[in-house]
Every structure is written in C-alpha cells, then in structure tokens.
Image (cartoon, rainbow, N blue to C red; front, top):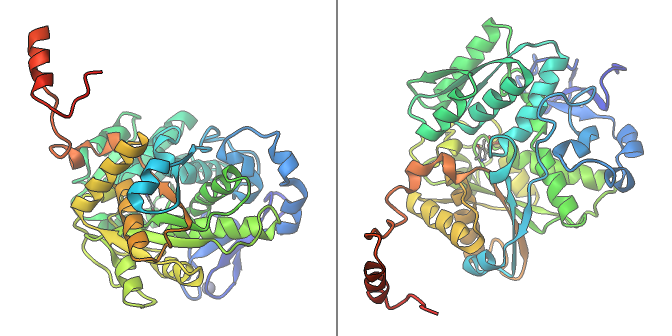
Amino acid sequence: MNKDSGFMKALKCRECGREYPLEATHVCEFDFGPLEVAYDYDKIKKTLTKDALSERPQTMWRFRELLPIAGEPTVGTGVGYTPLIKADRLAKWLGIREAWVKNDAVNYPTLSFKDRVVSVALSRARELGFTTVACASTGNLANSVAANAASAGMDSFVFIPADLEKGKILNSLIYGARVVGIRGHYDEVNRLCAEIAGKYGWAFVNVNMRPYYAEGSKSMAFEIAEQLNWKLPQHTVVPMASGSLLTKIHKGYQELIKLGLANDTQPTVHGAQATGCSPISAAFKEGKDFFKPVKPNTIAKSLAIGTPADGFYALKVMKETGGASDDVSDDEIRDAMKALAECEGIFTETAGGVTVGSAKKLIASGKIPAEDSVVLCVTGNGLKTLDAVQGHVGKPDEIKPSLREFEALIESDSKIKTK
Ligand SMILES: *Cc1c(COP(=O)(O)O)cnc(C)c1O
Ligand SMILES: [Zn+2]
C-alpha cells in the first residue's frame, strides 16, 4: 500500500479482483473489466464518526474519507449538501404515503449532480500532475468540467454531441472551455474520446479518470442518509444514463452500513430511463442480465446513452436490492416536470422528469408499495433545457397598462379568486 494515498488502497478490477496502482487508468489488462477504488475501511472507521461530522462544513467533502483523493480537495470544495425536501404535495400526485426530493438541481456551481463527480476527478487529476482536463459529455458534465476547470486555473476540452440543447452548449462556452461538437450521438463521442485519451496526456474525467470520477456520486447517498438522520430510505429512484450514479448510490449506502453509521434496513434502489433511450430499463423488464445497445431518441438528452458503460452493474444492483426499473415517454417526462414544479416549486430538467415520471409508474404498478417512503434523485436544472418545455406550459396573458383591461381579464376567468 502506498503511504501517500490517504484512505485508498488500490484500484481493483470489478471482474477478477486484480489490483492496480492508483494512477489514471480504468480497465483491467487481463479481462478489460472496469477498475474501482478500494479503501481501507478500518482506517476510515477511526476518523469518520458522527462526532467528527458534526464539526465539518456542509459540503460533500465532509465525507472526505470515502472519496478517492490522497490529500485535501482543491477543486470544487463547495460542492454538494443540496436540500432534501419532504415533498408532501408531490407524494399525493405520485400516489404514495411519503416522498422526498434530493434536489441537485441547485448543486454548486453548475446546477447538476455532475459537480460531485467533477470535483473529485479534478482534485485527483491535480494530485496526479495533470494540467489539462477533458470529458465526453451529454451536457451537464461538460458544464461542470468547464466551470470547475476555470475556477482551478486548468485548461479544459469538452466533447459533446453537436445537437445538444443551446443552454447546455452556452453553459460550457461561457467558462472559456474548448468545446468540440461531434456530429454523432453520445456513444460516438465517447468512442472518439477513448482514442483521444490514449493519444494526448489529458485527464479525461470519465475515461482514464473514471474510477475516481464515479466515486463522487456516492456523496449523494451519504447526504441523503445523514439528512434522514441516518435512517436509510426504503426506496431510492435514480435516473440512469451510463448507470454509474445508480450503482454508486447503492455502494454509498452499503459503505455507511459497513462503517456502522447506518443500520442495514435493506434499501431498495430503482432505475429510471426515457423510453426513447431505455436499454437498461428494457433489459430489466425482460429479465435479462445484459442490455441491447440502442440509438437514442428522447428529449432527455442528458440521459441519452445507448451503450451504457455500467448498465450490467446497474441491472445487478436493482435485482439484488429488490428494486425495479421503468421508463417514460417525452410527454410523460414533461408532465412530471410540471408536476414537480407545481407541487414543490422545483424546476428540473428533463432527467428529473424521467425520475419523477418513472417513480409514478413504479408506484402505480406496486413495485414501490404505496404505503412506503421514497427518495427521488432530481439531478439537473430546468433552466438548461428550456427548449424541452417551450410551447407546453401555456403563455402569459398580455394586456394594456389599464385597470379596465385587467378587470376584464379576471372576469373572463371564473376560476380566479378575487379575494
Ligand atoms: C449524468 C447525469 C445522470 C446520470 O448519469 P450516469 O451516467 O447514469 O451516472 C443523471 N442525471 C443527469 C441530469 C445527468 O447529467
Ligand atoms: Zn480483471
């Protein structure tokens, strides 16, 4: 074990268990299995206690021992600790006794859950001596890499499908990142990035840095558990693109159990996808262990990955925890976005509509029992996907600046309360 590696032990192959040094590498040389960070939990147990936590700042880095950096974080030190809202009105709409919303739509600094993974990947990239960072992105990752790299004084390259939402593209350009639009879908962007990463000495957060990057997602689970006063939720519904977030939320809960911070109440993890890109959900419904790649066609572009890297492991987690998966059409996504906005005052992007809409279906079918409690992971902000709801939320009334015109407007609508 390397003395300078903090609480990390090694990178370990998820398939054969072979160990690798803690470098910028992500696949096993023997079986091409994905590498994952292994920790020294005995060492972690000594410092990560509820007492210690009570004195730490409210960011995701309060769980620093369980995040894969050797020293202290240097990028994205203010990320995380987003609100967990008790959503009583939404629970009624969903048809369930109790619902909570973990609101990463207001994560800092770029309004999506991706700030969690990026702060980890960039802090680790710096430790490994990189000065240029890059990513293959469906949008939110590009925004977060661009912003966090800017604040750290690092150079960044972000690769995206060229037909992404305008809001997502602008939200990368503003930070001075080099934005490269690829005329193709995400899976083609990703394949190209694997080649580029092999050729240029950059830290690709979701390619050669993927083992570190992916661990950042666990922080969402840690926060949910702490915000529920260390009682793990019965059900958690998670949107799936590559499937990584879902597997890491499960890993996060299991680590808290292992460390004795939470009791093993067997938390169930469910997946959500857009029907227009639902390789994982389709495989789950057919009872298969492997997904069939698809060509995405959905307004939920941030989830549009047709060949999900962690799809196999996401299927396994859902099966092992007694969870299920469902998916929703573009219209159902918009309806769910409106329901969340009207019930709770939270404007989420399309991915949040996927989570809320799929949760409704899972509840209706009894996969999530109506007498239970559920946490919904809302992962992105609606201001970035305005195109998706444009024309679907009505129009403002327009009148002259005259009281008479306003009175006429009010009288024409019998539903309006005048007192
Ligand atoms: C990236 C992303 C996810 C989940 O991605 P995974 O690849 O499954 O980890 C969920 N929601 C939003 C908004 C995202 O940008
Ligand atoms: Zn291996």
